[in-house]
Length: 449
Image (cartoon, rainbow, N blue to C red; front, side, top):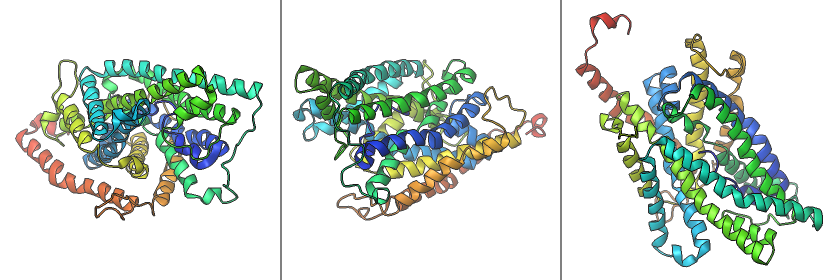
């Protein structure tokens, strides 16, 4: 849910060069990932409920903020989930451009959505086990890639280009450098997504904290080692962008059979990355409407499950929404995704602190430090979210032939976020009042409630 290997980090390298890309990928886990994993480790072990982060915020801050948490997360998913079928199509086209020419590209994206929807209907264990195998499969070419890069450094001693040519002293101020940081934040986000399937996980009190910490380390390693191998092999970072891993594999493997085979394996891994990330994240997001329906914030039909315990109506509804968004060029709008996701993440840090105050006796198998430490955990992520807001202030949506062409990403994301309170007032609040009016509270329970 967080990472599908090094696919997606290409623009970090293209914007910052090898040296700064590696620094960014080493620093961000400390400021961005580690605080998030500690927060989630405590909340997921204390409240391993289906719906995860929505349940935490609802319990700590009330139904209004719980609704906003889900609204922000589901809105962000529209931008996020449109990206992964695009990655699948991008790498599929490297096998043969004819496969994805014209309307075929959209049909392949639609096929990814359909396949993952059917896979999700088989249940969380099927998705989880499949994700492990897919992750191992897509990483296998990079084992060879890294080995060849380090071998070339030892045997050939090529000239190493640590910085981007022409970057100069103003590299920090360059838009490409800001893009590199935003893309790195995007590649390191999503730790809370696994919390929504908590009741479908064995022994979550023990497994969640361990999974968070191990996955954070594994993610950083899978990002940094291929970049280091590229640098040591003497490859250039200039103009390196999404989809260029195949070209890098061909260069590092040589002009013969090894280079061609490695490039082909990397292309296959890119297809697996697009489908696998979509599949795992679909499992997470589809639990949110179900949990909201159980809290009378959405119609009860969203809580219906099949015999494997999967909220099938929610799966079909979310899949339809993502399919309708596939033609939108949201892959360029990572900053919108970050703004919406970042806002929901801050609510989770607030829930951590509020629950420490309101429910000090709540059993916490894993505790993220003392109260002061818990309060300070959100400082690093909050600072990075503010940076994302600042960096996106002048970024335009660029949707051709629409009124949104010159609207900034920050304005657009802010409008979407502000629709949450409006929809709560128009839908969730009346629905909750209606349900309460139909189910009177027994007198024996009224005092307790």
